[in-house]
Image (cartoon, rainbow, N blue to C red; front, top):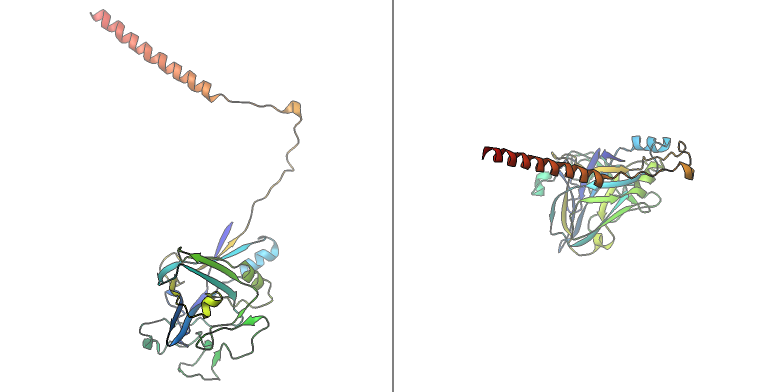
Length: 289
């Protein structure tokens, strides 16, 4: 059985533009660009409502589920043949926001509220940091078991290290179907709040000087059927042998239905009918002559 849960919030956070919010953009992006200006990446924050699934698991309606994060490719540019993505549970709350990434980025001047690379919740409209209204990812000590990692600009989200899903790609479609069961199961325990998942490149692919191009995925604002979704896969089959009784050897009857015999008889009848018609025609012709 497969049940789909659709995202209720997401955002792409960009290292290069720092406080840019893109919460209602039509695409989600993973980028990695290395240049003389530094190494700049982007990451994806995404959250799914889990209350219904949590209740079903707790009641026993759903047993031993697997969870798969699905994102659908909208575009891929200068992406290498091989790369690996990883996803962790986010360890702080964040606000989706209502910004879009516009080109040139100077057009985004007033779309800097809510979450971004630097901030998890920016309330002021100013580009500058206002401590009384703006909350940075680094505004408090990291929770136990969580981490933060960045290259050129401080921020980029925080996450729990021990529970994650990965997916490797090798010369194939960039469509993502990542097994995130450990991460979602950890969220379902209630040990931490559901602040969603963060998707980024794995290990050194996030920090080295290699360019990994740009992958775009359809967001929940898309006008297509390819919205981000979390698949819940579980087994609903059941087996009941209590209504069957054992057969003894003298009760066993094997019956073979001879379909071949029927076909032969049917073919013979057809042949006789044809012969009968031919003989009739010959008889009529003879009488006429």
